[in-house]
Length: 252
Image (cartoon, rainbow, N blue to C red; front, side):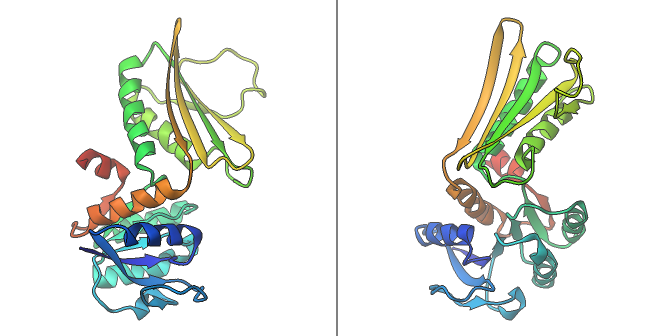
């Protein structure tokens, strides 16, 4: 039985994880952390992680990047694995994670969906096999409230493909400003914003007379919560180090 501390337990994603864990016989939430205490929870809820000193195997964080310092300090003190499922971290904060990973197991991924990370693995395989003969374009779609573009997931897909190629890829975000033919070394990234689209990513490999498209469509944010719970089970008992969905997908 994996014992979980849930940071951000009363937020939207926290409530989804709460429900998923309650239906899972292999794990349980032993404590929650949230500044909002207006919700009734079946476990104790604290304002800060340091207030909980009971038994735990792992922490899941679905809160805000500003909580990172307190989370890392708490987990380092207790040598507790942590799943960092929040988005929007700065480069400096990501460097903090790597430093903390020298003494504590840290799981971080740009996207917690198992499906997206399978798509990334497939895209790397396709890029290796098709290199030199197919142009690569990535199209992502999200709701009209999303601020950043392209999405962090689209960039993660591009980075994974770039690592696979034998040449450094050139990321192209805006074609209308430069009138020229497409270079063979380009990876095009395109963002669409509208309505309530949860998240859609298409990786297009376009060759002569044929096109291969890898697609992932998220119908709800629950897919990210499912991935976080899977990651919690995966991380329990792991040694110090940085882990990601690539490690989890690889083990599966």
